[in-house]
Length: 205
Image 1 (cartoon, helix red, strand yellow):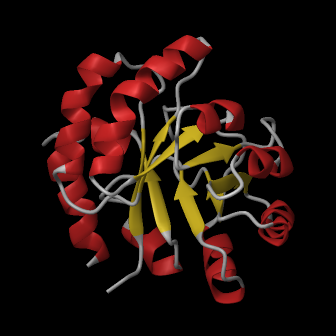
Image 2 (image 1 turned 90 degrees about the vertical axis):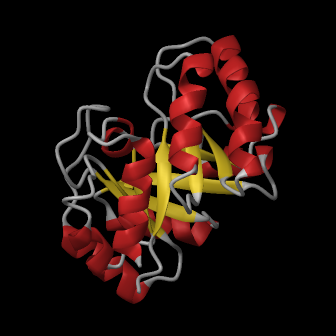
């Protein structure tokens, strides 16, 4: 059995009211470690509204509610953590905003960035993209050997991200990923989000 767990990522655009159904379906599929609200090109108020609608549903499932990019809003909105990219807030700013929250850092395909983040105190590092993805324009293409190296040498958990589906996930699990961050692979699964989450969890078991 692997220790890998699912890290759900929201679609880049959503209406919170319309998204509640698919989100509840996904959570009904079994264990989900984290859910990241990652909205692109929207106002702060839209982020606030979405977080207010979705957060309680996610947290009631025992799943961590993570906000992308914005430590200030994550702290204001009662999120469990924040995920920062290399162009977003720094790790130090994120940690200052959420002293006891989860702070994860995008490290693309860079061992150096990942080691810096781990030494600074990041709760996880994210590597990717491992596969072609339509969700966002990847800054880097990561190699599965990077995950193997990290899992063998470091204790800070690694999140694999980028175009992950039930079909291509086994290699990442085998390489030692602690979490698989999945967006379209769940929301666009032909049998629906619940079936997708069940299939990922079956794979981890």
